[in-house]
Image (cartoon, rainbow, N blue to C red):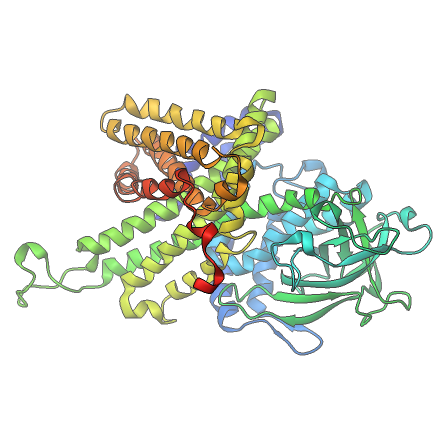
Length: 606
């Protein structure tokens, strides 16, 4: 069994105790053997299909010949195998053709695909999220026609938010949607509109991997004066399929007015098509008229709330993808370090050339880099799986348990997205360093891991956006209820660790860091002036994430006592407390004193 699979099985069974979910009515028809079979199947498909597609998709980028986007055959083969596995609908109800798996098992299974090829796996992630949003917010017909055809793999999906002039500032989008003639509200697929505008950075926006692509598009409906509403509250959500279909899901043979304007060629994620799409430019007129046909989801102005269903799920998935790229780099550099002889032991002076060289894994600084990677990658995986376990609590626990899980998810989602994206990128950088000059060559995979992972700091919201969300909204919402719930979980671990031999020092260190985090949170908002509190939101995000990861590592290490993996888990936990947790003090210092520098800097000084 691979080291990763051993860690995954331990986190699921020894730490998160997924077997307890079998007592819930929703999962009662499953057994632990069911979960194992799902993981085994996904591990095999990832190894046999996604790994070959990964390198080929990186060196043979998607290209557009003016009519079609071309992708390597291995990409289509990998995705066909994924579709056949049924994993697109893994968490859906049996009655809807799903497996009714717990979210934590679904996420653990999808981790294999992220590790094998995060770029190919992006098509799956987007389709699952798109269809899941429609199951939550769509009409019965929209669920039947669009969501279920996506879950079956017949159609794939995207999310279309950003525009060339409005990246993260969704309030400033200008794509417009106007009612499509009289009786537009009577269309069985939903209120029908004509959309005109441009969307940028759309992953999986054009391909021929499935017979249709279902775009979820944010746009604004003009008022009676023809002007677009201002702000985020004026945003609505629309289903815009590339190929039009009837209310039974049969394609009509008519192309919608959605055109590929060009492909973006990125640093990483090269196997995922990334596009600029034009909606309603008239290249593919529908019934002789320009304007892409779109069907409204939910009420006018309710689009952003609906879209957050997909965005929050995607943020955790991005964090998982970052974790698995960190894990892949760690494994590759560990294997290299064990087989690469260089230098001699320091204990012998290191200068006796007659002595045999030793593998570089025996050198202290290489151990530092490997242990850091292990702490970052495995800690990030634990964070993603913990959040997935909270999703299961949210949907199947009693009322009090579900409410607490919801609060915890609100607070942890910005961390689940940002922390792995930052620190597993650092893990990939360390992997390159372990390989030395070889790390920069395409003879080894670690340079691609770094390039792919660099995008995750931007995908689904930058660090700055996650930081503003965390300090500006999540820790102060409902009088700080989410932060209090998290502190309760952390203090429970501190109490357990304080009674365990060998853990007392670390329990005290975590308790102290948590106290400083709470004090800094209060100090940041002491004046009640948002500009003062939020100027240092990103250092706050860094500190918050490190406290969360220190807690998870302590909790995991407590659970690992007596397990075969205990020495490795304890070493990573000790590394985190010795080398990482002390960084919290410096980050929180600028937060607590509301350091004014970043508010005062004039751009002329830069």
